[in-house]
Image (tube, rainbow, N blue to C red; front, side, top):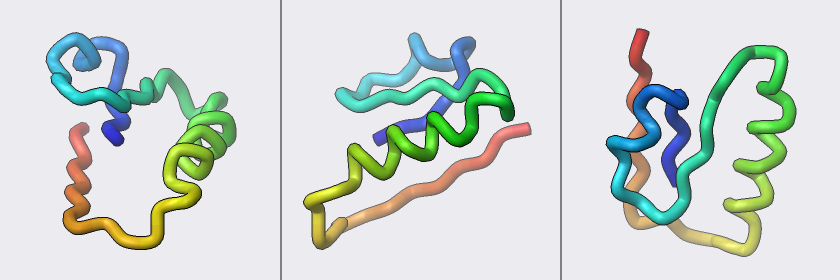
Length: 52
């Protein structure tokens, strides 16, 4: 799963892409992340990148 901005979304070649648009929608985004992660017990790899 990738979380990115609308400007960068078209550059991502991954099946699960969520878009961060504003802090006002952060609760909704976190809910989407939780739904996507449920049912998975183990992740082989996790990468976190934060751009400014």
